[in-house]
Length: 145
Image: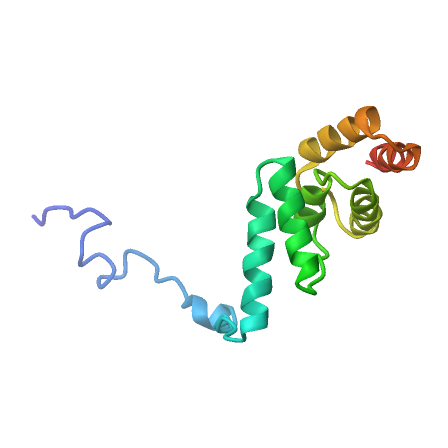
């Protein structure tokens, strides 16, 4: 009498006990996407470095310095939630209002990524901003969330 071999034994597939799954490459079209190489242009590298410094800034003074350095070098702020969320910490209320307007347009296209942080900053602006226009813009944006 033969001893029973488990279905998971190496020869089970060969004996036809385990069904063979169809090859996934036949079911799905596979596409290999290679990332584009990093830019070697000095101007692009400078902008990327300055944007990274802005996004890494931890306090109001470093946000202000990083923003002003980026703009003084002739670059524009990236049109992203992360960048404009950082600029909400800027000491110049004109820059804050510009970022509030930009965030309003961005949030009309996509949901808020860091909603609790955004709400906290908007509340702080509503309470502590010197200019009424800045407080009103923060209030309006917070109501839209």
